[in-house]
Length: 191
Image (cartoon, rainbow, N blue to C red; front, top):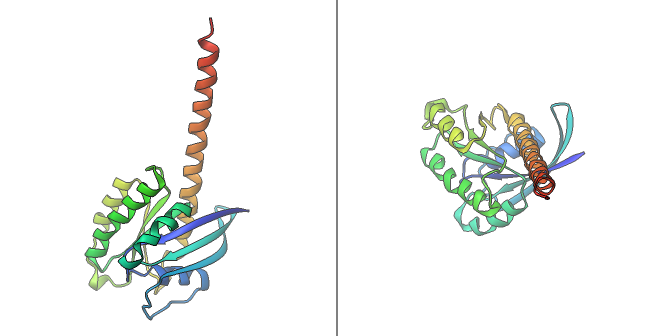
């Protein structure tokens, strides 16, 4: 069974822990208690394949930002979460992605952009078009969720597994092409 290290990132108060607990334990955590880091494990099926997820729920507050490089270095896929009820949280996810790309040293990183709190439509500040436009510029999927009502919670974790798998396939294809070019060059360039 394949293992997937998923890191949940985003500003404070957007519902990272609520989504993770809803996914792992099927319950909604009402009280906001700032996280330093929590670690979860869960086995799921994604497109008929078993997947073992190791999920790291990280701190969104700036005081723990220095720990983020280590989380990112060890992660394979990233759920970047903002609150649909906070325009500022939407702005704050951009530097999170930049940090992921900087630490990973590539822009070919499995990321899923997540807009949480879709149940709070009256307080909504981020439109679907704004979020879709950002996801398209990042070349990643975008999903709206509600930890409170368990809307699309399982979907974001399944989607990040798909993203990880698709990036692995792309890497393998590039390696094969590179290997083929090298062998072709060596046999074609001999006199």
